[in-house]
Amino acid sequence: MIDIHSHILPGVDDGAQDEQASIEMARVAIDEGITHIVASPHHRNRTYDNYRDEIRTSVTVLNDLFQSEGINLTVLPGQEVRIYGEILDDLAKGEIQTVNDSKYLLVEFPSDSVPHYASQLFYDMQMEGIQPIIVHPERNRELLNNHEKMYEFVRNGVLTQVTAASVVGKFGEQIATFSEQLIRANLTHFIASDAHNTTTRGFLMQEAFAHIEDKIDAEKAFLFMENGQLLMDDQNVYKEEPQRIQTKKKRFFGLF
Image 1 (cartoon, rainbow, N blue to C red):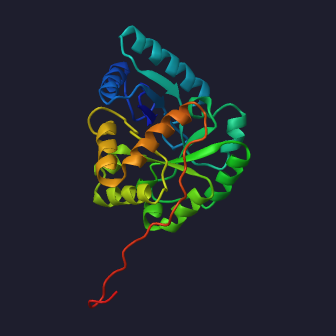
Image 2 (cartoon, rainbow, N blue to C red):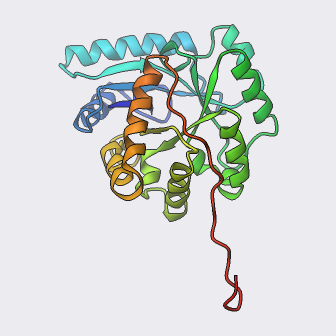
Image 3 (cartoon, rainbow, N blue to C red):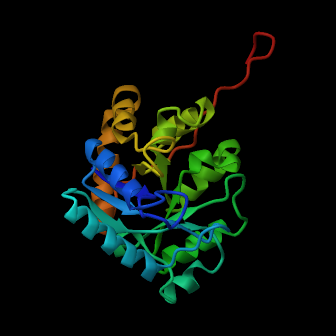
């Protein structure tokens, strides 16, 4: 299994705070069946800046540490970029790290809103050969309340990644319900851990995939796993025709 979003690099953001924490996370990841994990530290989120060259150095050091500890987990370079208007400029400057040097880039929205320029930026990125992946859209309040905006993003070629913990209800029932709606409507393409530690923000990948397979759609669980491999190999991922989320109409006085 491939985990395309984690905060396993030590001492760079709000994920693993030191090498021992990274080792503990790696051992749990292996128990989850993960063989490759993308280190995607925060960038441009007001608190943390992690640049491409720094990330690549940290990934090399961490892989060497895991090898010396006999930990059979491969760390790949990535970056969780808080959306901002100059992403393409900074990509050209060598400051941005795509997932494993592929065309795919993890992009994060603020928790409460979607910037007005997002659609245009995503269009520009795709025209330059960069494929944006919106991470944890199910935890964005504006998207949670505006399903049409989510549909339009995916219809226009943007990919999305739902967090395993969201699927199994760790962020609450409303987010779990939205996660299921995204999956059923073909509005997401990856499941990843977004793991920060082994306690409060763990992996939960096996639990999430089991839930999707048993409660939602077994074929989608397989598709998400395949897409992780395709992304790592810089291949085109599987996409099904996006659908609008169908919500139940409220009942008034016994009538619809």
